[in-house]
Image 1 (cartoon, helix red, strand yellow):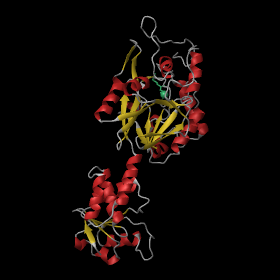
Image 2 (image 1 turned 45 degrees about the vertical axis):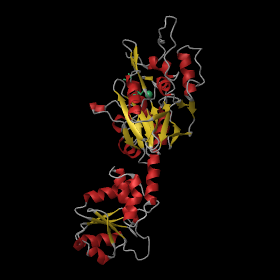
Image 3 (image 1 turned 90 degrees about the vertical axis):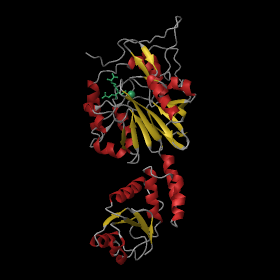
Image 4 (image 1 turned 30 degrees about the vertical axis):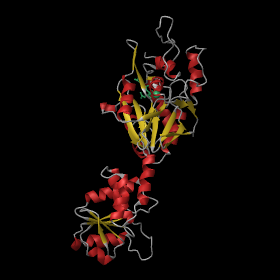
Length: 431
Ligand SMILES: N[C@@H](CCC(=O)N[C@@H](CS)C(=O)NCC(=O)O)C(=O)O
Ligand SMILES: [Fe+2]
């Protein structure tokens, strides 16, 4: 059996036979890693026999079966973990050795110990062709935006910068314009922190996206469009929200055609952040217009699912519906298990540190608003909880700004801007 030494910790080989395995400890190996699915070829020993031979020779044994076309990030991580946990030098094999070396190289790149550009040379220097591994990395990177969350503690909101590392293009999602209702002051510190991040990382803003017209803070979309020139967008059903609140505010002059945004997204519409594919899922319930932005493997689910220990968003604002929210949750939970979910708020249950990233699998397992619930039990639970919640402190302040894309009211003849607060328009009073 030809063994190719890659480094002190790893060698790779083609398929070993039983007596090769028995001899591995004498050749200095402590572990055997099998990257080959069972039953690829007649006469192949298979993982059960290999494991038995390895264990009777005193070797550790790991089985990480892949084919060239089916390598996943979990496979790459498993291979890296097997190698890291090996008690001494490991021998990894597949049929000819290429998959074993590919898994190693991909794991080194994902762990940041090697760059993708070094793959071909690593392969060549050991007599392997790693070009399929390089293509895997390119595909993988095209699917994985770098997501930076910015927690805004006054309203528990999470703003995001979502970047394509290959092109340095990014989207900003749900930016916050600061507002202190006691003094009536507005400010841009939260939005400026996003701009500083963008500048510091050499990024270019391609989109300023809102997931829904927020009821608890002002959107900084209009401010950021002014600063970056990037187009703004929101879900197309914003027009329904405009019509609803146009009545509540008695505001005949409000344009209710969504023209305050550069683009209105319909369910299923696609867009790009650099080279990464974006897709829009209509996810109403919290509001009539809510959308989830799916960018590569990351879904910005805003006020649908919070972190698992925070349950779900409320559904009792004008136009809200617990039943619609349940349906939207089903659409999100039908995404692949490993999809990264980024929430729109975190209210820090039990005063834990703020958190905003989960996965579909984690939500299905650990969020009590979805695990073990059905539509009826969820609607009962959601509506019962909503009856206990006072209206958000800023709902009447925020909606008149956010249904115009984050524009403050026009100044009056003295140059000052004023908000308009309808009295006795909403239920949910604090007493
Ligand atoms: N206390 C907050 C409440 C904000 C609020 O109602 N947040 C919405 C999202 S915009 C929510 O779903 N809250 C769920 C909850 O409070 O349990 C405020 O006054 O601003
Ligand atoms: Fe919200």
